[in-house]
Image 1 (cartoon, rainbow, N blue to C red):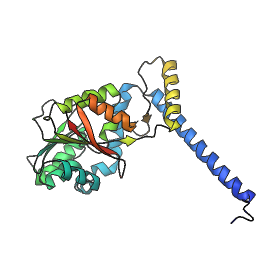
Image 2 (image 1 turned 90 degrees about the vertical axis):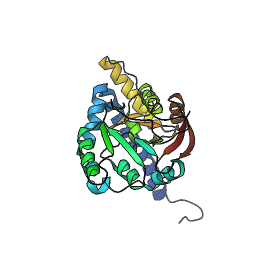
Image 3 (image 1 turned 90 degrees about the horizontal axis):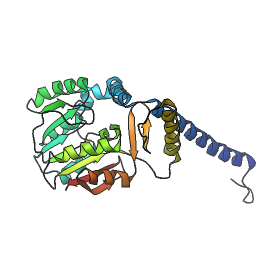
Image 4 (image 1 turned 30 degrees about the vertical axis):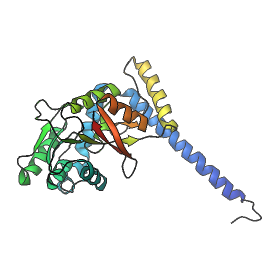
Length: 266
């Protein structure tokens, strides 16, 4: 409470301390992200992603992989994917989305760059869906032998953020566009960032400086981060621009409970 509208000194000090503490934490996070982003070379990106998914127990857990689609995934799929249609699942991991789609009567095929997850998912699928395929692919690319066309695409939860570089992401989108007919729907999830968030600006400046010192020429994009994995954080304009360049147009977007867009092949 205040006395005569005057905020006590101790309260004002606590509010100021909290504000400065949060600013310091954000500053340290920006330095941390920029440091590792500046020290990573292209070959480290795939290695970091593989190492992280190799040690995260959840993605190896049978119960998790048989848990089905998340509520937001199921809602988007049921509203936009034709019943019983064939669905391509990039970044499928050990098959949670693939199994979830098959449980709902769809005909899915998935791929992922992690050999251990693909092998594990194949064993999960063998019990109930032996005809369903889970293929190994290079990071950020389609597998060598992929039948199509497909009726729809469900891009594995957050998998798009691990592809380094807009050019590489557009190449992947263009390849996915080649697996479907015009008008086919795709659900794509990602990390969302605010254009006013200075953390990414500071991290990029540090990373660019470090790469210059190291004599590296690979560009650093605003929104790039390296923590456990390489992740790119998007604004809405960026994600929709990349989609359009890759052959898709966004028709619906949602920030909660997990940022994602529904788009159609053009």
